[in-house]
Every structure is written in C-alpha cells, then in structure tokens.
Image (cartoon, rainbow, N blue to C red; front, top):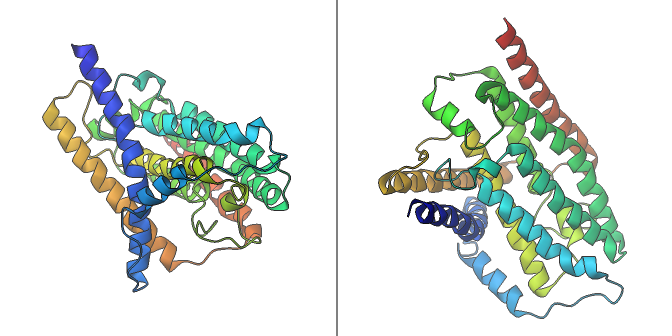
Length: 318
C-alpha cells in the first residue's frame, strides 16, 4: 500500500509540472500585457495554441532526416523527466534517488544537443545561426550551473535535490553572501537557458536576434507542439529549481501526510506565481541586449558562481 501511495505522489508531481507549464507562460504574457496597458491574451491561451498545433498536420522538408522528426519527442521527454525530478511540493519522493543536480544538467544538455542538431539538419541559414548561438550560450551556462551545484554541495554535503531542500529548510544555514551570489548566478542562467529578455525575445522572428526561434522555424504541427511544451517545461524547471534550492518554504518532507502535501502544493504554486510575475516585470523593464554582449552577461554569471564556491570553501576552512 505504501508503494502505491509513493507511486501516486510521484505521478502527481509529473502531471503537475506538465499541467502548469502552459499556465506559467500565459501568466508571464498576461503580466507583460497589463503593465503595457494592453488586455493581452487569456491565461489559458497557451493550452489552446498547443491543442491547435497538435491538430495540424506536420509539414516536413524533403531533405529532412529521421533526426528532424525524432528530435521534438526526445527534447520533450528529456525536459519532462528533468522537470519531474526537481522537488516541487514535496521532497524525498519515490524517484528522488535519481534527482541529482548533475543529472538534471545532463538531461538539459541532451535536450539542447538534439535541438541544435535539428536546427542544422535541414540546412537553412537561420537554423545554423540559431544552433551556433545556442552552443555559445551553453558553453558558459553549463559551467555556471555546475559552480552553483558545487556551492550548494559544500553546505548540504550532497548534490541530491532531495537533500538540499531539507538542509536549507530545517537547519540553521543563515544568510551567506556565497548563497546570494549562487542564486543570482542561477537566475542569470535561467534567463539565458529559457531564451528570455535580455538574452532573447521569445516573441520575435527577426533573423538578427533570434536564438531559440531560429532553430524551430522549420517545425510545424505536432512537432512544433512538442518543442513548445518542452520550452514551457524548461521554464517551470528553473523556477522550481530556484525555489527548491533557495526558498524551500512549506515543502513537505519524506513520507508526509495529505495535509503537508496540500500545504506544499499551495506554497509551490505561490512560488511559481511570484516567479512568473517577477519575470514579466523584469522583461518589461529591460531591453534586449546585442548578441555579442551575451558572453559578457553569462561571463558575469560564471564569475559569480566561481566566487560563491571559492568564498564558501575559504570560509569553511577558517
């Protein structure tokens, strides 16, 4: 009976991240529209867009290989698994043994690998430009993620996402400059990885500024739907990761009761709502930077992650 309950809670988390991903995207769009004094699309518009794309026929280029057709499903699967492993309303679930931060980075890297290959598969100039820019971003974003992981592992003595929230929630970690640096570095990486302003504009189709959109211009129908839901899941993943690492308030512990799970669910949805509102406010208040300044942006994030690790390592040795 206990195994069935554990499977149910783990399955609930997998369904939860998949269900709220389009809603979070709709929330960000709504916040941006309201700040700009526009009505904006409905909150449920991303669901309708995905349903419309699934119903459409997928048009594939004549010279596209099997990789072009298989990449959307691989991207969606890797991103969904990564998002489902990050603790949301509870930690210490059935599959928490596999929820390692380094494994999450590897899954995201696999999804990026398939996306960049698919962008270059057809041979269009836009796809090649987008793929090259995506790899440039990855070369700085992934090391920054690893530096953040090393910083947290020095405190939690583990890279398991089931252990980090418990240490930060139940022990006296206190306020540390190194943790602040690590959190800022992770936020900067999240903006770059999700193709958000100031790195990229998810609503533009200008060839001089596109990164993510340039790689998916050749996709349509159900293939495009898989890529879109994968991008929405990635945004949920990073907001969940920031919350689990630095703000695990109200998160239920292992083998908690139904009441604790409900409290954890409420706190998780509140964190997602706050993150979506803050993201909308940030994107409206800042302009998109030039592509050639992106390495400087991510270089600052990498330096913050390195300084956070170094500062915490030195302070522990004193």
